[in-house]
Image (cartoon, rainbow, N blue to C red; front, side, top):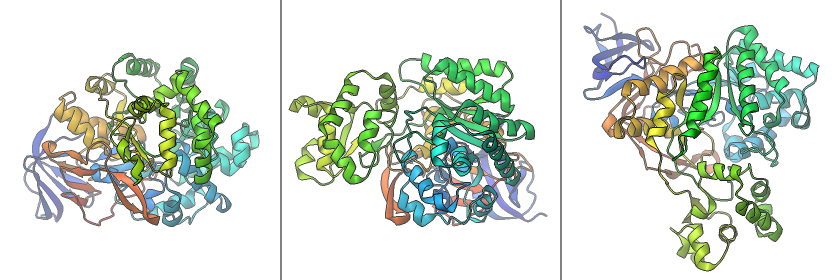
Length: 577
């Protein structure tokens, strides 16, 4: 009789492969699924009673920014609390390798702006025992991990390493530089990278650099991107993640097709999102994806399904950066921001943009917080004179006092030392449209959690729990079988995970055991504030309810919501391990 590590008893198996659910016991041994159903193969060291519970593969989150946080938080919370057992690092072209020692500070400053990761936490929490990509991967492998991870080559880091920051921002690469970037990508792939990533959002990027200008890859030319794509084609492995502007819809989408054609490898396109009222918004993206797939190009669509509120202060808000007027006001030191918010000329620019019906900014604000007039005053930094405004919208205050909403927002922020907090109200979400993004294409999956980024603003890492509790349980728009296929199996295939994403004998034992009727993100909407980052920095979190067990590589990391302290996660070089 075999010596079994874990026996999951009496659960309903949803295997991630769209197999109709069925009741069966699951046995785990040596980090693998040993048996599903049938007679017991032996005594188990641990038994999990799954009567009335779902037993499913752990979730795969392909869009995270835990590159820094994984060094002090092995579980990549909040994602690890919500059933995510594998993450992909280095998205959007941002990360920390290769980086020369002299450039470490600038690399961290870049991440403080574009992904809003606290600088002091990075300084205290990252070991920086690497320069090259192979050295970085070795360091990541040594670090204790409660989840599995694979790593992109962050293209911003690569370009700065080869060209220098100023050159990378202002000109295309020379032939020699392109050859060196190819060589380094080959070296990184040999060491275990899964591909490369980039963000290309133009000079007015919604996620700007520390200096207020675009990130390096935002203005990267086609030839330099295709140069890297050729490496994946030559090797016949790896994949690409790209966050691409579609301002010039025809031209931008044509480039994505050219990228997929050049690489002949999967391209993950960010991000397909629905509006609340107009189905043409997401259907246009799905129709394009269908046409690309009909041409035989391996394109996938990552969809934004999470319902998470945005709460923020102007002390570190960066998600209006596509607006030159807002970017000018919200960059710089604390003292510089205060002075600029008082400047009549800069205020005039903000108001002029506000009243010009700038469609781009309107779209951004609709998705990340809401138009200024709709923002609710959430907290006033203990300023007594401002307490009367708590719970009111900026539009209502402006109307009552005969002022412009921009003036209201800036005056309050200055009076509250930039710590007055504004909340984007919950204006509702369209469950039908959300479900259509998933069900109307064979090549889309939920995600874009941004886990590890913008941690003071929102809690996207809880998307898995929200997806199951809302669209499966409450709205009955998506079946359990389809949901687990899209949360685990399909993203695993798209990203090249070799033996994960489904519950099958012989595959890695990444498993979640949960009660569907119990699932919840706690607290709802914008979460709660905790000071648990290095340097006593704070973040917003939503804890998970309903997960009875989360298992990574055959070891339980969370039991009934409590962390076991086990760190069985692995660096999966090229998806293997």
